[in-house]
Figure 1: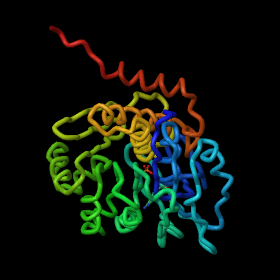
Figure 2: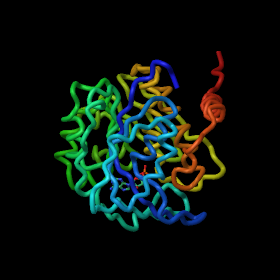
Figure 3: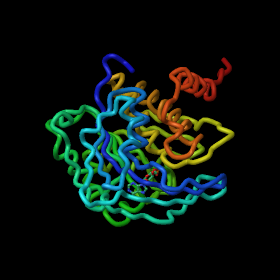
Figure 4: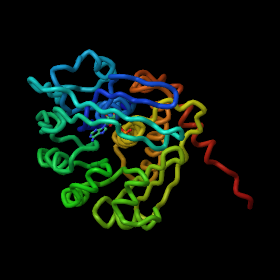
Length: 310
Ligand code: AMP
């Protein structure tokens, strides 16, 4: 971690997931956007996590996050409540999945309360939640954060379009996947989609394309990063959140949001996502040795480098 690293505030879901992939099934395992994103960001910067669980949640599951320096003061245990549960089944190509069930439980009434010490956080990650809940987070900030990154999903594009457009106007950067970008913009072409979405607010946009990598749009710059070519992808759950956490963690570590730092952040995010998908649940993010992380970052450089002839 950089000595001058700034704090990252992560607000999102905590889930108990049941995930089926062509390689097996994991029942009642730790998940949620805040969990994956906080774990990933903690490799670069100190993290404050704000989220909610029910009384059924075993808080010891978060000892690995605490050991990684994640501050859990903003974790609310809702009295009499049950933790959010989600079930998903991946198709053979692992790029598509069906949601088998969503029991919102405490997430349905989640009303994030930011501890006083987090209200000045310069770097903020709004995980996939109802856009009105995302707005409540920003409403509590003492000052405009330096860089606000948001995630969303098809559900909100479909049922809360107006609220989503309002929050887009308050984001510096939106991170979404390709199908969501097409749906949000109404354009099949991702370049046109990016232009349309950026007109709605976020000056910086990342479009994730699963195993095909990610595109970054910032100013007039377009950057394309590959996904790491892994032979063994076990569970894609949380890859997007791990990407977002690694991405913002790097920016906070450098305390920079210029084009060069953003390009690096996309690669760090992709590196964290690649560790995430190698194991079930959050297993791949528990303890990535620093050397393995830097080696993967370097491998990304080699992967995309070529000598242009004179
Ligand atoms: P991702 O694979 O990046 O879409 O993230 C998967 C994680 O998001 C899982 O661990 C789920 O617990 C969580 N999740 C799934 N659906 C929702 C939802 N509607 N709201 C918030 N979190 C969700």
